[in-house]
Length: 203
Image (cartoon, rainbow, N blue to C red):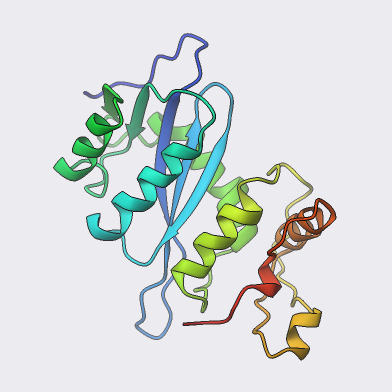
């Protein structure tokens, strides 16, 4: 059904979009799955190695389950990664009865989640290919990024290197933008057990 969500002030109307992290030397980069609730602005981000049904559907199911309220509707653009039978079957299994998509060639139809692609995903991860495995990045999303408020400071387009105790233990430190470092610092203050520099290196 081609129309925007109509939440009428009720939570549970999700918008979804994919963000490609970037390729390097012919090697495909990861894909981030970005889910935002229309009303409450709750947001959860996941990461997959490929944008195929095999990788996407399990992560999508997990992300939907993270929202603290009943999900009533699911809205995507016209990408085939979401407009397919496997995703439709997943939504039916989760009793999400309303499945809508954007109009063709109308990029603003999914403007809410697309703005969050830039403000949250690009702001924290940048554009360059991440050498860590998609599993490690997804773990970081679940333990640090998603539980932490995302509107935490001004954007900084210049990445800086993370220097941490993990470097002396042999772990690979990943270049992080200013907002991502601030996210990690907030998570450390709140007692989060795993932070980005402490996660294991590429696999």
